[in-house]
Length: 333
Image (cartoon, rainbow, N blue to C red):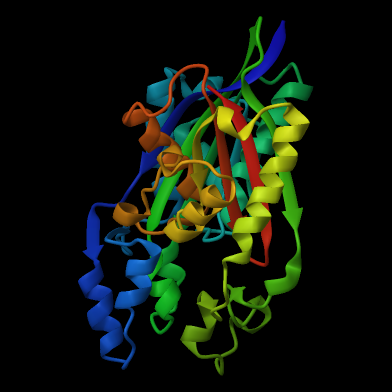
């Protein structure tokens, strides 16, 4: 018998307010910058934007978590672990996980913490939660949640960040189940190489200067010094190939790939390099914008809704974080 760690349920949350490409084109045109080609290239159409007065990382995570609990038919008191992934937290003290614990009334979740590995954050959290559940038989269910407020933290003068970032939350309930066959969380592969560590920064000025009155407000926000991201495609291919060899599985056995939703061309180039058809991935960055660490999970949820994947299928999550670090996660439904 196998002790499998499976996705019991998934929930997502998207703010009600939507903005279209025309808003960002007009915004940057007033600065003498044309972003129309950029947003078309990356695959944008609309973005969901949080209400700054009433929404934050915790409120969005709460809504996504409620949906995950509902779809999994799990009660809050059944949760043993909460891992809250975010790089746009509402608080540093206390942890966002604790604030979510309070809202959900997860009275038996005593191992709770925040995790930040930028845009690979939810995959990192799923990896950690899965291994905790595998190694400790006293723990049975984990809530992994990611929340991203890209529109709040992006500098309005940054054409890449501000025209592409959006807001969302995603939540996954993980459960350890005993079954006669191997499925659920299979394995992960990571790589870190800080060659572009200075290219993508928040706060751009650093926390040591955050409360300095001489620091401009825009320097306290997310800023990107543009660089060619296409090298990531080859890195993803190599990362996944090692994972496939380790798990004795062919890339052709993968039903769907769920990539970072930052760049549609990068996802398609990666599949081309692997000689895998473009029908093997789900792209949702056109209607939700780029939602950071939540984006691969939101794409997965979309595939569930569209019935692109089914019980027994192998899927791969693959994304990249600032700096850079990359992660590939193999899962079987």
